[in-house]
Amino acid sequence: MKKRKLSAAERREENWGWIMVAPTIIGLFILNIWPFIQTIYTSFCEHLGFGKYKFIGIQNYADMFGSAEFWKATWNTVWFCILTVPVGMVLALFVAMLLNTKVKFKGGFRTIFFLPLVCAPAAVAMVWQWIFNGEYGVLNQILGTNIQWITNSKTAVVAVAIVSVWSSVGYDAVLLLAGLQNIPKTLYEANSIDGAGKVRQFFTITLPMISPSLFSVLIMRLMASMKVYDLIYMMSDSTNPAMADMQSLMYLFYRSSFVAGDRGYGSAIVIWTVCLILLVTLFQFWGQKKWVTYDI
Image (tube, rainbow, N blue to C red; front, side, top):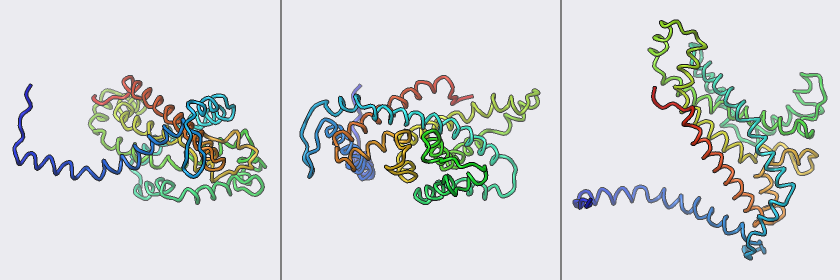
């Protein structure tokens, strides 16, 4: 089919459209696409210092896949996702449903739950370090224990996971609340006339109707959990005996690139992390056909 020739007015409108989106496209290329291309190239190189690199092929990947520390960091990242994502999703949905009911000071509660997201990560980490302190921490004082929450290999990841869920549940709840408020009340009324109780309404109306919102929150939360770095960095240090059980892929990247100065190896870790995120995202988009409902 022959393409219709644009008029002068249509060409001007199209040109103005390209001019308006040009800053975003240029910024995306300079700040995202080009650095990623450089990272791919660097992952096949040895860093010689002062911005110089030597191409060494797949040696960085061979060293990475042969490293027990790397596989441990990969498992730590996966385990962190298992600890944070399901619990965070359930809590966020619970909070969203509470905020969707007729309660006083609803706006104030929304603000309180959203506050952790706008707090500086350093401040959040300092407060939770004090709470989890093994000697004078508030948590041990309440429980009457002396558990070394951050330095014990059995509890260190759990402690960081608790902070991560606490920090993100408010934001996720606000997103889910928007989905809940878009559900027509007539659906519940009609379902009640048919004799359906609250539990049945939750599974037949609420969950299907907010499944697109749940899907979006799930993708964002999994990506954020797989890229966790700041909480581990601020709540612990290199002398922590539990670091081997806390170290995520992004923390290993930081140590390799900026502490050891091996930026080629660090870039290989980044590419591996990107591949993991891509694989998980593709699996999610494939699986959404089975549980996400866009039309009822």
